[in-house]
Image (cartoon, rainbow, N blue to C red; front, side, top):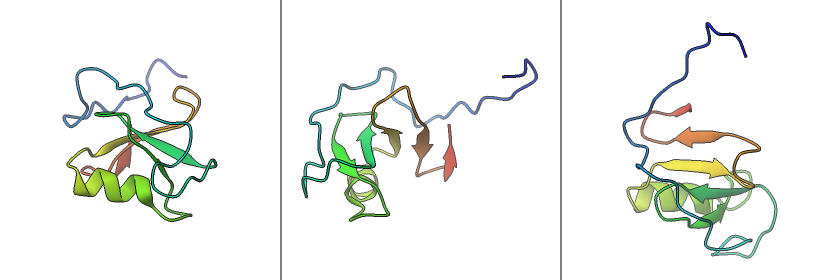
Length: 84
């Protein structure tokens, strides 16, 4: 990464990162394309499946999600509608 790269700091990100509560979508049991809530660790499937991670993020006021496994993908803020 270039030293000139800008990193988006999100005001919605919690102070700490929660641990995943499960290794599959907690609503439908899917094990692919999982997303984890940064605030509480809820694990849900992505929007290309049933969209349970998005539903949790918008319904629970926890707008930050991480791809699972955390640290090997991306983070997204639904409030800002952008990657972190």
